[in-house]
Image (cartoon, rainbow, N blue to C red; front, side, top):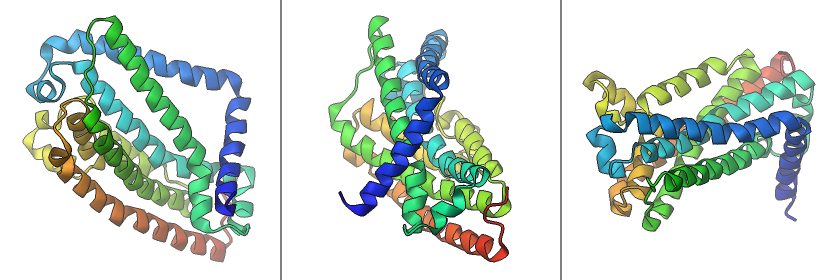
Length: 277
């Protein structure tokens, strides 16, 4: 096995063993997926009569489909934003952070490897979200029609959104390492995304003054692009602007995040505060 892949696999295995060691929490976490999807399913049914035109165009009148494919990208963004800061915070508290950063492994691999399990587990959760949602819809005779032609564009949009959010998440980890606090950055972006990112309702229904702020959020481009690709079947050309904007976000924010992390790491080492928390 390639040395870098072996080390990345070691990170995943370590985090998996820690996760499953808390058996009740692990099971409750998975059970929460079913509960959450069920909650939104019945909530969508309750609000179905208030369906807005923006939802209707993308989903053919299925509010639950709109919400389901807003939650899935949002889940990925949440783990991308928070996993790095949380893992590095754990490393500070348990005393393993310094050992990870001084081992003969390149810093980018340490950064990404530390959160790799979170992404794998979230991918499993998202697949479970969608599968349970499709089962609920089928059982209630309100099936969600997915377009196979939209799978590839949707995956590209997902990947670009993750890369963008990873850049911000690495910045949050840098804040945790140097300033010992990074939660505010993550909380601010998460809250803004939930409110303005088109996760639960169309961004077109926002007040005119807030729509420019919505356009500045990667999650807004992601949710709209994924729905257009998978639910409306509008084709690759229709979501190309979404891919272009998210590519720009990723090209800027991911290298910026890595650069800020290196600067914070050098500063923490110089000041001797790397393991303080």
